[in-house]
Structures are given as C-alpha cells and as structure tokens.
Image 1 (cartoon, helix red, strand yellow):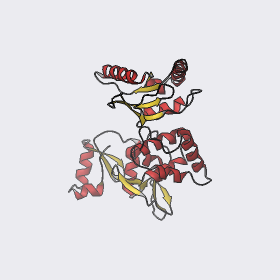
Image 2: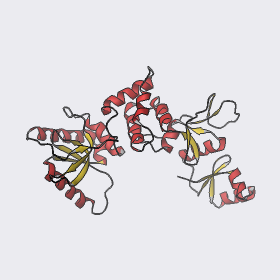
Image 3: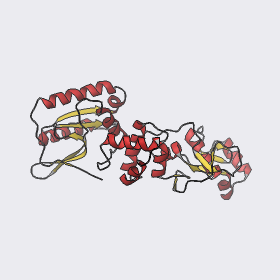
Image 4: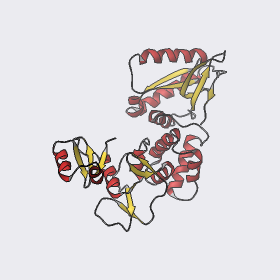
Length: 299
C-alpha cells in the first residue's frame, strides 16, 4: 500500500515548502489531495485519494473504504463518501459529516477505519447477498469477526438484518468453518446452482487406515464420494504435485475428483456447473464409502 505523508509530517522531518515542491517536481512524491503526498510518481488511485482524504481530515474510513482496507473479499471502492468527520467541522473535502462518530475504530493502512463487525454491518446495508457473503467468509477466516458477531447482526427487522439471515441460511449456519479464499467462496456459491447437490463439507482432513494424515480437501461430499480441487495460480511443479495429491486422496477414499480453475469458476460458471452435475451423476451410479479417517475441521 502506498506510503502517504501529510505536509505536517514532512515539515516535522525538516522539509520546508520549497523542499516539498521540489520533491514533487522530481517525482519523489506526488500530491494526492491538498495537504497529503504519496511516495513515487504514480498517478493517485481511488484508494490513494480516499486514504489521503481520511488522513487530511483526521476522519474515519467506513463502508467500502474500510472493507478494502480490511481486505474483505468482494469489496471494491464505490462512489459513496466513505470518510466520515464530525458534522461541526467545516471544509469542502469529499467527506460525510455525521453527528456521532464511529467508536469501534482501528488503524489500518495509515488511516483510521471501522473494525470488522462495524464494517460488515455497514456493508450489509450496501452490498447484495452474494457479495456480502464473500466479505463475511473472508472476515470469519481472518478472525476479523466471530460467529457470534454475525449472529448478532441477524437480529431485527431491517433490510440489512434480513440479508444477514439469508446469508447465514445459505451457508448452512455459523457452526461450520469459513472458506479460506475467494475462489472457495465462489465455488461454494456456484455449487448451489447444481440441482440435487447438497452443501459441501469444508476443510475435510483425510487419514489412511493407519491413522496417518493424507491430505486436507477444501470441499467434499463424503456421503456422495466427491471432492473438489480448486486451482488458483499455478507454480512450477504444481501439476505434478496436484496429480500426486489427487492420486493419494482417491487411493484412500475412492472418491471422484472435480478439478476447477479460477477461470472456470468465474468466466464459465454455467459450463462448470454442468461438469459438477455430471460428476454428481457419476457418483449416484456407483457405491460409495466414507473413509474412516475423514473429519471436517471447525473454527
């Protein structure tokens, strides 16, 4: 994330206005907003501008800005005013003035923003169900919120609370582990479109007949004898490792494997769902057994 400095911070380092202007001319730093400079000569990004605005006003990042700073999956900056300041503060900056400032605030990316539970609740009023589910899965995985925090959001009659309840139902409750990547979340969401396919078990640890650990699979249907391998970025020797891993899992479980890439999940979802449906059809045509050493990991 780009390093930002206010003019006050630069002055505290002994730099005069002449030094600051000179540094900007030689592209040592770039003016982001009035009173805030960013390292390097790159043009200011929307995130640079939002962060710089929060710094310049001593404001608090909320909504999409807080979601991006917290690295919540699915969240992107929007056109809303995501920096809030007290409503008695004058100025022309692009901020939202509020009578009561957020109290659950943390420091991220050099600026103050709302914490995980507060941010997710704010986003529940802005995002659709699919995107909010992606955000909450990443927040649960990274420990930014607890299941109890999400459960508390479901209380009430607001549209945001209704969204929370729908997402909780869609994921099968809050007593199952979160997904561990955006790709996993997207796969879970896509698999719901496959008729007759129940929700998968997540993070299933597999052991051989001697109790030795074999592998952990992200998504599996033990009762059907299916597991899914998701391929993100490929590295050297990755195909060999994947083939060996798949062979080991199949040897212990006898399960069928569905392997899907990021592009297949995101760019050709309909074709991917049909492939998964075909795998389900194959599974129904053969006797299955649940391996003795299959366990689903919790929080």
